[in-house]
Length: 127
Image 1: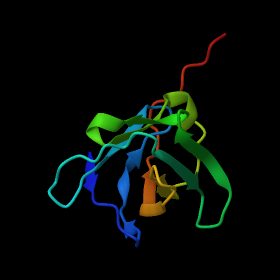
Image 2: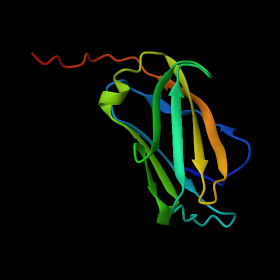
Image 3: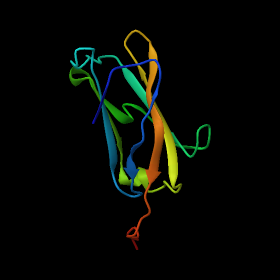
Image 4: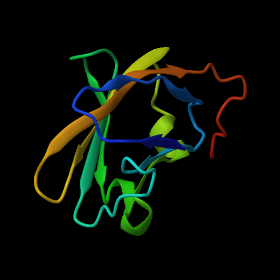
């Protein structure tokens, strides 16, 4: 899990690799200056994964659709299913994460690369 204070400048933060066909997840915990979780009630998040910056969209996630907000913990959990990652064919992709607070302020605390691993085991074929 990544813990962050919301900043005005995004941090270039490489995420752990994605194995096509396997579940993948990442979590961000928002904390205040005293390292106490921020109540994120009415906050939203959105994240896009693309082949390159400005390139073809691979997947878009948002609160309620791939991103879960747990307000009491200041926690945003980003989850992809194996079915969603099975289409990741590029070797390297990029992402950014935007968070909107309850007053409408928008920040992009993280962006960066994600490596896509090569599969060794072939997916099962259902007859």
